[in-house]
Length: 231
Image (cartoon, rainbow, N blue to C red; front, side, top):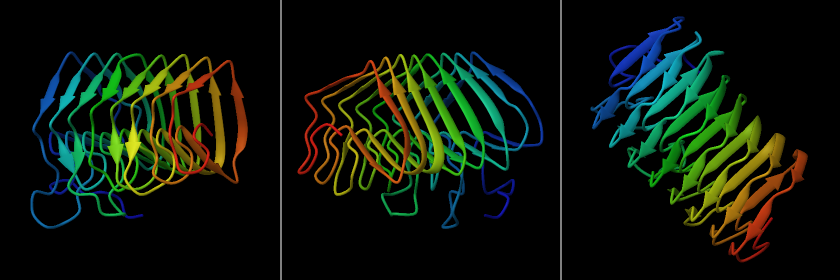
């Protein structure tokens, strides 16, 4: 992983080692790297630091990875009450991850708000995590889509915690995990509804390989897959 550079990444904001508070803003139709180069964070890219983002709307933003937001290099971010809709990766190539949010080696906590109707993406219709952590608390993830794994969230060798949330109507075209695809690392789900998600392969709601974790007080209903309609 090479540190993302300004001018190529972060269509609206590019932040390095800073801890800004972004509140009550609208980020619409921004784009990272509008030329043929890869771009991370269509609306904003954070490299390190501890950003706080509250009560913002992210819509129509596009990047190679992280259509709306991207977090790298041990960033520790807190997102509260935000709405993400209609964000996308530039296309559905397998390397393009996180139609709304991309997390690489960083820790992100999302409390409240909604991530709905985002895609396309190679994987992670709402968010994609690699070697970092994502906590979703009281979040709605609905109607997101990816061509490959994780119609809502794809996590690889990271930690994914989902609680008090609703994950519904997400889908993948050819991969696993209509809602969540997790490979390696940790997965903990509690007090959450996973309803009506769809995969053409394995795990209509959840696909998990080589994962430690738990599933508690959850409703898994009406999910569809060729193998393992629920989990």
